[in-house]
Image (spheres, rainbow, N blue to C red):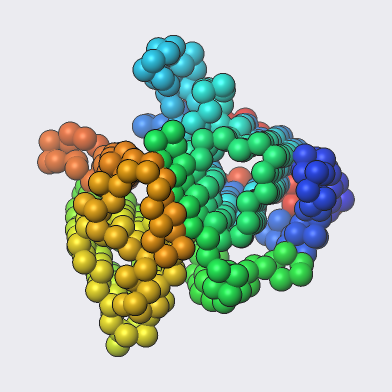
Length: 471
């Protein structure tokens, strides 16, 4: 294990150098997180389809239990039980900016260098115009169940269940359960539980109270996650490990237009409709997945009914709920109804990222509402929601409860509507019988996997030999 320990020391030293102005020592997290024997226990796997460019090169790295799809270059990094999903990376010839029409000279590639990604999801395409052919993650450490979505970064630390979305970060610290989508940050420290979305046209901002974070997702003195959400996820981890131990699994019966990843957990009494995508590390139990719906990485959908065209973004959790047609459930949401207290969400709703709904009595959210924050009852809902048609008329500054909004509500609604449509199209929700408008649900049906093994013993135990996979 000597070389793995040297690798992690190099990673923490470089991350600390980038974060020295905050006096933030990433060793506290790393030393209390890594179980070295597990780095030699699990294989990693690389997905191959005819729909995605093939290239995978890794050197001086450890990648136990991780999944890769698309073009990726990994150097001097430790990637543990993470998903590096490149099915939306840009392609050669794509135009990044219509106002500056320069086509890409090559397919985009993940370039991960000197980083530790621990149970992290990396997806989408880079939104950094300075490096259009590279989705770069350098000298960065991310903690349990963080999401790096379309965001390049250098020298950052992401706390547990944090999300960075469609932006660029440089030498930043994101607290646990924070969500940011704000173009570009330099040398910023974001408090835990912040939800911050900002463009040139609008700004939406909310912060969870510390008592809520302490209950649902906080960290202890060793910077390890704790709280109800982490406990909920941890209880299901053994289900995923079984998938790595079995070579041949009994196939799940689904319509010909739908795809269930081989590394997803599908429990009994689950009904899957047409054009449905269930990604790796999703967990679905006793649930009806209506036509065109999806369950992305690290989602949990239990005892629920998704009516159709429902988007459950990375890390979303839905328990004992009815989700209306074309509703969006954002990153790392925790929607927790009870068997005798069902949660009902009307059609066309937008549940903002990192929203917590934990109820003891039945609760109904009317159709076409924007919902955020922490909700336990109808009174909380009145302070943490607004009809979408009403926010569409916002101009200037508005406050509702602890949420502040500045700018054009019309631009905000339009941006979310376009994004939901993009997700549905990309996932193949609109595919017809003639194969028109194919997406991930159709393209991922014939995926195969190369499994790659680490050294099991000696000074290189836990490390992977340098390997290059190409067409």
